[in-house]
Amino acid sequence: MEHWVKDSLNVLYANIYNQCVDAENNYFLVGVINDQTRVAEYVVIPNNQITSRKQRSILMQIYTKTFDGTFAGFDNLKTNSFYNLVVYEQTNNTNTDPTNAVVLGLRWQGTMIIDADSEVTFTEYANPTARNYVYYNTEE
Image (tube, rainbow, N blue to C red; front, side, top):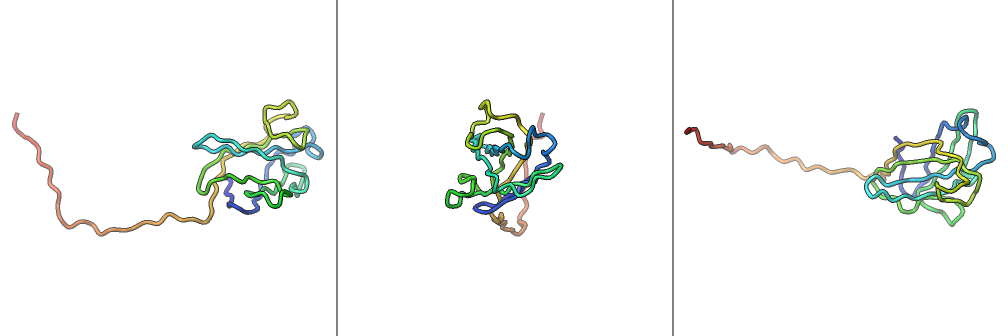
């Protein structure tokens, strides 16, 4: 499971190099689908955000906020929400539709949570001292 932080730079290390048709020259369409609402958002990762293309893996820098329009990111992610994360290979650097003909196929799929350092707080209460009785009819 991927753990990403909202409004920050996150790294996706996907072991997809060998599955790609042309990992060096094609583009990657990354999508997040909210598990509750099923709302999907897709972003093409520009080449300057792919920091490593090795024999087995591709390292992508993915922002959870678009910075000055220069870095692709997901702007509508909700804190403490679960998402289905998908990576498609495609031949176009502007397409954001995974059903388009330029998409060569799904290359990676996983689960992600957006965690903005929030914690659930609990309140502990003392055990009650009074007893609770349950009465029932024993007559037949």
